Image (cartoon, rainbow, N blue to C red; front, side, top):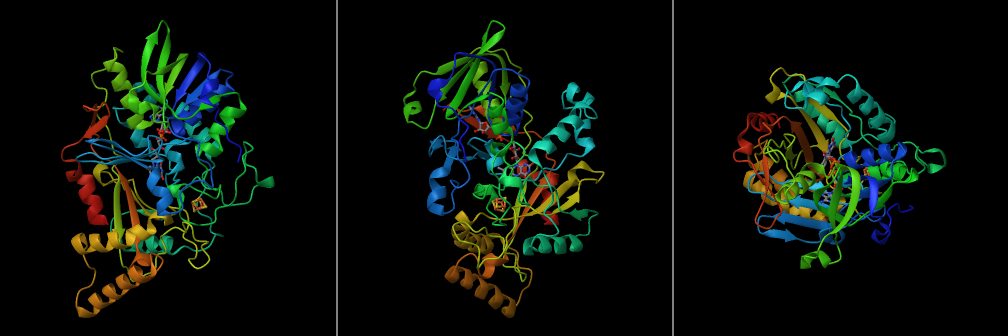
Length: 463
Ligand SMILES: Cc1cc2nc3c(=O)[nH]c(=O)nc-3n(C[C@H](O)[C@H](O)[C@H](O)COP(=O)(O)OP(=O)(O)OC[C@H]3O[C@@H](n4cnc5c(N)ncnc54)[C@H](O)[C@@H]3O)c2cc1C
Ligand code: SF4
């Protein structure tokens, strides 16, 4: 696959538009601005990692982890999986050309209309909910090509099991296959609508460690090459530190990272712009703005407040009687494993509840093969510590122990781990998280009592 980033040595001094970040926000902005004939520069802190280069084993995945934690930063600043560890709420984001679209679960679900009725949205957004926003969704669909897991594709045990769960669930809901940004059918000449090679999904289940099969419609496969085709210049390993006013324009200060240079407190490099589009994600954009404020940029006192974690809950049903086959292929061919399917293929939709705390979706998920082996002892320990057995008595206990022993001996594609259902809930939290800079100058998130909110209690009870 042809690479689309340009060496940093070729960056110019000035562009009409500088876009920061390359996920959905940055990808869309760069593509639309370049199509509108503007000179565009995109700065992304991560590397350009293309299909075939995403980790398939634990040894490959480990160096791709970077951790922001209260004592500082661990790992490479350009590691693909960026975990922010905080006292009450942890956050995972992607770091690479394509942003979190590289490691997310592909679901492209439109929000319910009532989401945009919330007065906390800027008035301009609310006013255009039925006009510009609708157009925007339609354009995003044209580019990302979301579609449900096809009826003609192989049956998936994890999808069937989630349907069974939905049938047992008493709360009012609907069950269906949500639109996901995955290519399922062969494309003419294997080229997609922007001329990038894509292949049909092979049902490996490794979507959240990065798709090595060119099937996942990340922004690296559509918006970013489209921006490049229209003249945008894309620079990787350029981590923006802060923004400064320059007359009517801006000075964007950045560091070239992943070289070791940034560890020595090197002076920043800079590029000038008439317009800056800050699309470095919830955490990244806020961190840049907080630093900019420290450097003298006038910004609201509300900056960093009112963060939502999307009401996310991760849950597991472990050592089930039904086989789930929810561990991705990783470095295996998949022949002896059978189809796992894209990370999320089905949804229990409870978004039309009247009480917003009860509005949520429950989706099934898959675990990437790269960490499947490491999950065997982790799940056994977690289940012993926290699990609630569905059946009791000596026979049930024997059954559970035998299946756990099978996983320990034969690996994650057997026994208790082959019967692991992963559940992902998205709901509505109170949006009371506060982001600020710590003494290391890195972002910290504070949210006392986050886990005690009603949406989490209701979600847990439903699981
Ligand atoms: C495992 C996982 C699964 C998910 N599954 C789904 C799903 O199925 N459906 C769904 O709707 N959402 C899902 N999400 C959430 C969704 O992916 C994100 O909300 C979305 O990608 C955010 O897009 P963004 O453009 O705002 O930010 P991002 O995609 O995070 O992009 C921000 C970019 O800015 C870069 N950046 C950050 N700081 C700087 C800096 N200082 N200088 C330069 N560049 C910088 C980052 O490296 C990144 O590339 C999931 C998230 C995760 C972690
Ligand atoms: S299931 Fe595999 S091939 Fe399909 S989108 Fe996910 S990672 Fe790519």
